[in-house]
Length: 212
Figure 1 (cartoon, rainbow, N blue to C red):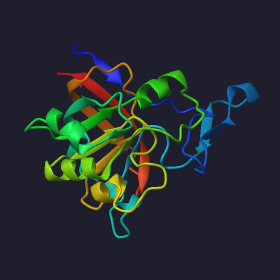
Figure 2 (figure 1 turned 90 degrees about the vertical axis):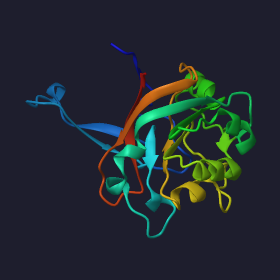
Figure 3 (figure 1 turned 60 degrees about the vertical axis):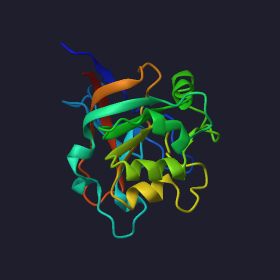
Figure 4 (figure 1 turned 30 degrees about the vertical axis):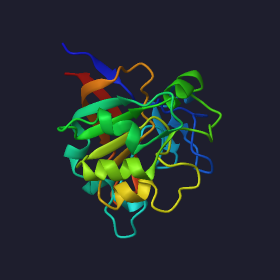
């Protein structure tokens, strides 16, 4: 059997979140400990929680929500590109790594080591981001989805025509918060399915890479 790598962040109280987002909190509505006949949890959080997918509606006023995203953007062959040692993911950096048949990309950066060492934070405001030129290159190359190993694909401040804008305005899926510290660069089969939340600008997802 081919090896399956779970690249999803665990959801737990006090987990790392993007600044000012509503934190994840799970409580027990019913529990055996209280004498109930079953355990039932409830939780609150931002939709952009842990490993999650951004739909066009996140940055496009008339964009579609998560439930309308084409699943072939998020399921299929994907290339993990080694971008470690760089402050940002640029077109110059990734162009030599892109193959003619690359459809989905996951950028492995120094963020991966940071998340492995500090899974609950603090939030690193100097995280490695995807530049606008890299996003434009992905658009030009017909890439269906782009993943980054931190909670945002953009530099702090989300400048105009940032990666978020360029990708989502062209209906390219964005996956954020993937864990790639233990993943070797190369081609895998990606499965990243967000919760089917109607009209949502984003949704948590369970993401895995399968050896090909």
